[in-house]
Length: 83
Image 1 (cartoon, rainbow, N blue to C red):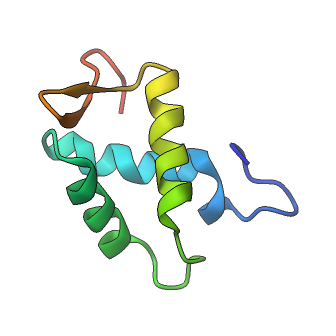
Image 2 (cartoon, rainbow, N blue to C red; image 1 turned 120 degrees about the vertical axis):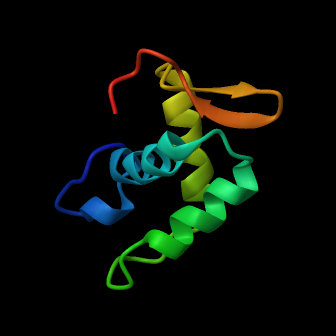
């Protein structure tokens, strides 16, 4: 689930979805809904469809490992995190 396996393609793994989220958050802190819309619009059309629950699991993973934080209601990359 976190990493791709022979049963889970890379575009469905949480680590790849998390990378997509970090790419969006590198520009500026954003609301969850804005990050969701940008990630959906920038994903490869050939990739497996991304559902909101998988997106939220990736956000939760990034928060749990200390890569992102919530500041004033916006998701932001923690300073000092390599991206």
